[in-house]
Length: 167
Image 1 (tube, rainbow, N blue to C red):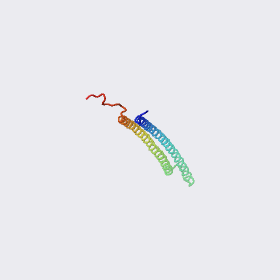
Image 2 (tube, rainbow, N blue to C red):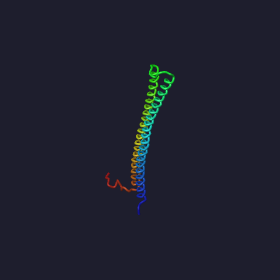
Image 3 (cartoon, rainbow, N blue to C red):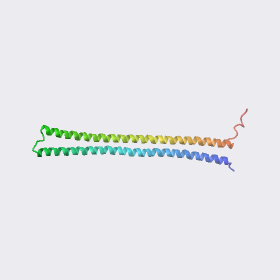
C-alpha cells in the first residue's frame, strides 16, 4: 500500500511541473502576441508613409492646376504670362505647392516613425512579459521543491538524517 505522504509528494511534484509548464506557455504566448502586434504596427507605418506620398502627389497635381488656371486667367484678361508680376505669382504658387507637398511627406514620415517606435516598445514589452513569466515558472519550481522536501521530511520519506550522525 502506498503511503498518503507519497501520494501527496507525487501530487505536489505534478502540480509544480504543471505550474512551470503553464508559465512557459504564457511566456511564449506573450512573445507571439507582441510580435503580431508589432508587425501590424509596422504595416500601419508603411501605409502612413505611402499615404503621405500619395498626398504629396495630389498637392503637386493641384498646384499645377492652380498654375494653369492662373496662366489662363492672365491670358484671358489680355495680360501676358511672362512679365515680372506674372512670373512672381506663378513662382509663389509653385513655392507654396512644393512646401505643402514636402510638409505632407515630412508629416507622414514622422507619423510612421512614431508608429515604428510603438512597434519597438510592443516588442520590448513582450520580451519583458515573457521574462516575467519565465521567472514565475522558476519560482514555482523552487516553491514546489521546497514543499516536496518539507512534506517528505515530515513523513520521514527521506530517511532519518540523524541515524548515521555521531555526536
